[in-house]
Length: 401
Ligand code: CTP
Image (cartoon, rainbow, N blue to C red; front, side):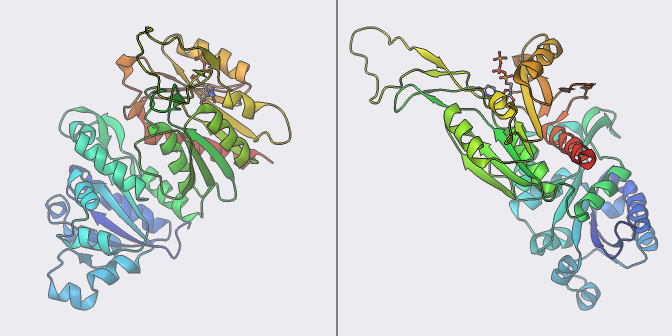
């Protein structure tokens, strides 16, 4: 009865996956949760209020302008009485309205008025999920601390295939249980590097790379979501700060290393940043001018390797050091060698050749390499990669004395 005494306000919105919410109510209640439901008008086209009410053994809230509803339980109280607001299925429409702060029905009013955590299980057509508008809405909601459960890849009711399918009901229940377990990584301090580094040429120019920071930021958000004290050391990115992490902003590789060393000791370090391998040996202190002498010759110097430095044996070495390998060919072979050279514990290799769209994109295909494992993960969103990695970190510390 992992959810005994917990009150979940389940907001069911209108998608074909709404029928699964009936099973969700049943399984949350089996774990001991009290489930109260809000049904949007379009959800009521897919499931009947009667079945929702029968399974939740409570009345179903549908209408913000219903005098009876307001008399029995005002919408503000409805949203505050719960310990968690769970939107499942969450359509593209409700995610958009949540992101915009629109409160034009009972569901969105409860979501805007709440002072409690909110989790969503998105369900929609693959094109809708991959639309820039949805991506921007999800990024905004995630940055505000909304927990995402799924979606997953699969066949859709509309006949298409791809991301957007609601994650299976038992996985939603697991995520809710994890949410209430106080955080499986509570008490752990974890460093995450993210983004590119900028290496100065002169005061106005720099060398950079195409890293967006999305994967590193998603890892930090997932760890913080599990209760880890998360220190995110980030190069310049356009991303919002993930909720619940301590962010340290840096520019160059040397700054990033210094910030990491200062942030030690830590239980784990995860180097996701795309650190520039080289910097300009002596950056000009004044802007380089075209003075008729032809283009400048830039002399490079090698940057410190942060992952390698953190992996060095010693009493400050985190117990678990993880790297990400960006490869454009022979991904697994190169990554196996890279893990040994850098002496990190795990390496997540990904193909970043332009055709994959990994750099700057939202999906990633990972190969996890450890001393005794070689796991090919299916293509998933960067957020899902982060959640899966966080789950494996939980398992590691669970068995680590
Ligand atoms: N890394 C680091 N410091 C560097 C270079 C890389 O911490 N100066 C880390 C990255 O954060 C990543 C891992 O090392 O976790 C692998 O980075 P990658 O760019 O794939 O490898 P490189 O070491 O740069 O090797 P190469 O360019 O030869 O592929």
